Amino acid sequence: MDLPKQINQVTADDAILWRDGHLFLLDQRKLPGEVTFLELHSAAETARAITEMVVRGAPAIGITAAYGVVLAGSLAFQSSPEDWKGAIESDLESLRRSRPTAVNLFWALRRMAALIQTLPDNKDPGDDLLQEAVRIHTQDREANRRMGELGASLLEADSGVITHCNAGALATGGYGTALGVIRSAHKRGLIRQVFADETRPWLQGARLTAWELLQDGIPVTLLADGAAAHRMAQGGVDWIIVGSDRIAANGDVANKIGTYSLAVAAKHHGVKVMVAAPTSTIDMEIPCGSEIPIEMRDADELLSCGGRQIAADGAGVWNPVFDITPAELVNAIVTERGVVLSPNEKKIEKMMMNRPESL
Image 1 (cartoon, rainbow, N blue to C red):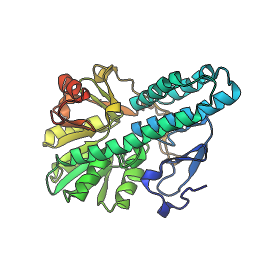
Image 2 (image 1 turned 60 degrees about the horizontal axis):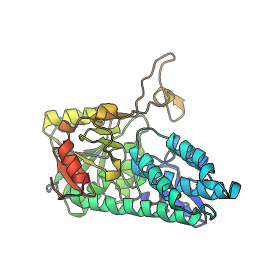
Image 3 (image 1 turned 90 degrees about the horizontal axis):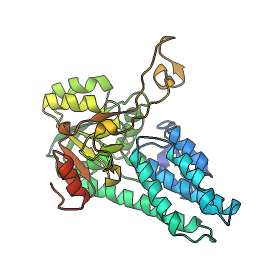
C-alpha cells in the first residue's frame, strides 16, 4: 500500500487518501507526534471516524462522507444487487448523523444521492460514485487555491494575522481555506507573523495549524485562547483569518468556539475579520446564525486533557463546539466565487448567483 509512514514524509495534503478500493484517513487526533492512517471499509466506519474527530473541518468532512458513499455503494450492490439503492439509504443516514453543524457534509451527501438516482439498478455503482467523490475532492482543492489568491489580495505588506482552530489542508481537500489565504499571502511576501490560537479543547491550533505552517516555513507564534485580545492591544495584528463550518444566508458565521469572542475583540481594536470558506459552506436555507444547529460535545473533552483528568470532580460542563459570529463583525467573506465585503443577505445572494467577484 502506497501510504506515507513517517511524519517527515507526510504533508497536510495527505489527510484523505483513496487506495485500492479503501479509504484512508490520517488520524488527526494523534498529530503532530504520531502519524497513523485508519483504513475504512464501510459507511458506518466512515461516519464513526467523522464523529470521533479522526477527520475534522467542514470541507474535509464533506469529502470524507462522499468517499463513505463510495464504500456504501459497492457493499449495497454486493448484498442487494436488485435493490442496492434501497439498501444504501441506511448508510446515507448514518453519514448524515455523524456531525450536525458542518453543512458541507449534507451538501456532499445530497450531491452523491442525486448521482445515485441517475445510475442503473443492475450495475455496481462503485466506479461512478468514486468518480464523483474524486471530483468533489479535486474541486475543493482548486477552490481553496482560488480563495487563497482572492483573500491574499486583501492584505497589505508586513501584515500580522491571528487564526483560530485549523482551516488548513488538514480541514479541506488540500491547501486550506484560512490557511490557504495565509499561504498565498506568505508567497507574496505579505505576511510578517502568524499568531495561532491553541484552540481548546481539541487544541487544533497548537497541534495542527502550527504543524502545517511550520511545514511550509511560515513563522507561527502560539497563543493561549485567552491571550488573543491582549495580543491585539499590543499592536501588530491586522487581520483575524478563520474558516467556517456553516455560513447563513445573511452572512452570520458558525465556526469553532472562540471565534465570536475573537471577532468582538477585533472590533474593539480596529482589527479586520476575514472568513474564508467555499460556497458549499454557505447555507442559503438558513436565514441567520441563530438557526444554525450547534453541536454539543461530551463533557470529558473539557474535564480531561490528553487522557488525564484536569478538572475538579463534580464540575458541570457546557461544551458547544461552535459559536456564531454576526455578519456585522465580519469585514470580508472570501469564497471561490469572489469576495463579499461587509456581508449581508443581498450581497451573499448576489455572490451565490455567480455575479461579479468583488461586491
